[in-house]
Length: 157
Image (cartoon, rainbow, N blue to C red):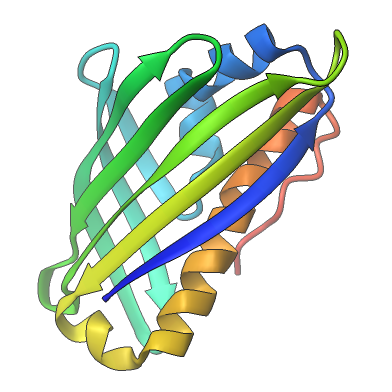
């Protein structure tokens, strides 16, 4: 079951700063909802452990995150895939692009795609869609807070 989520964040930081943060494993780990571990395997590959609750199902996903289509400092694709045992699998990615809006402001646009299978896919489209939207929104607002220094990260329950 696949879905697409689009959004935009206005970040009070120069494009170069935002680009560096998008490639920093510590920043990504802190901003990915439920991320417990993110270990750098190469400049573009990371091993990840993410714990998520979707409806009544709580699952721990082990998988990887990869950065592709790199066009520094303007755009890239971040994608991940994880297996959650009996809960099923989740995979998704986002095409992220950065555009300067003056010297110290960046407009980050994203188009994210998510796909789940297994037990989670039985939860129904609306729940999965709203959860995916919420998680994408949390990631990008956490990222914005971290990079712009406002420190207002969204806490997940």
